[in-house]
Length: 312
Image (cartoon, rainbow, N blue to C red):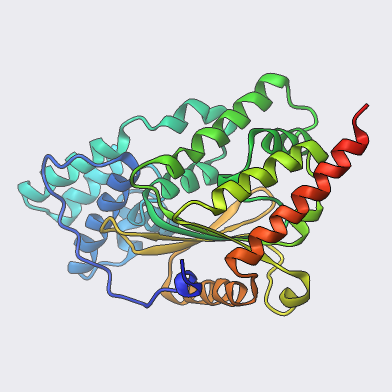
């Protein structure tokens, strides 16, 4: 994957033509449904505020629905269909997408340990064609090992029961299934050098985690880069960023910015462009793929030696 893969040229969003009877994954169906509703609204010269009044909600609620970032409610969708006076054929197509979007998805069984903002990210990841991310504190969630996950959850939730910890780890492991499917997204993951120096879970856990990153870095479609201290001071933000690109006919891209206990989802062109520029600058100062792999191997060897010294 070339250094230019973190950036993409701005393009016109493709028109969405829902197909009756077409079967799509829930995440993709929700995006297609939202885009169909957005097109219906804009074709009638209606504003988000106009639509918000119809569904008795806020402008942001309508915006999330149109971007496919929140589960669609039957009543809201059908009220909008009636308000837009869509044809019977269009109504039938939207109803089909609504039912597909409501189909059970695998992460619903983890609802008790999954905040809404993370549910949205997991659903969006499943429909992405490319995921570009920057992390400054921990290994990105899609690339973590179970031991590394367990240490993070235990440290972050010291009062959690063993069962809760297990469920949170199981959720994260299941989330990674998208990397092993035929339609897996390409991944560009930029890791701040500090992540290699932070012994999450201890030396043995770090050895396992670094071995996993080395293995992943040798797979086609996964590009792991280390962002060295000496080059990142002027370009590295103080928070993680994820840029998701889609090819399913809905909005073409968005940016996810993780906060302490919530997240922001940005899809306006100017906002996306700003964060895309940040990620591109980070990629420019990152080590090359081979040099990044060498750094991973050197860190793994250091932890292996430390683990050996600590062994009884």
